[in-house]
Image (tube, rainbow, N blue to C red; front, side, top):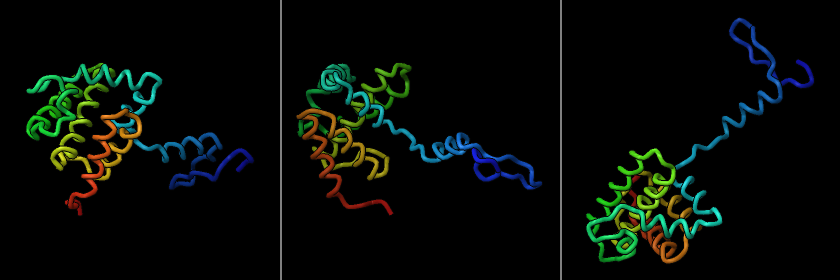
Length: 168
């Protein structure tokens, strides 16, 4: 082994080669990479200098629901759970069918805000994701959106914490 090499990676027959520092570093980085979640892409967009303005426009571009523009009823505690679930599904459908990053991000706003609205207004989890993933997503978004959305996300996270655990 030379000064610029790491321990040898040998095959069963003893063949192989010494890893260089660069190769070892790349392998370690691959092992430490955390997969990106959908909320990460959305948070990244919301953290941009025009994030708040972008959110305002995105909310207007969300699919309309039974009661009209989603931005109007997502914050309304009298919105029905069934309506919120249908809206969430429309956002999932939109996200899965688009090739546009912009449209995908807008659909994710609707998806995560629908999950938050169901929790905040009805105390119901409408996501199949693990509870800690839902909580993490709500908390991440809570840190990058303005009120009244921040308040809804905070309420949703608090209600999630108070629900009985169904996970083993």
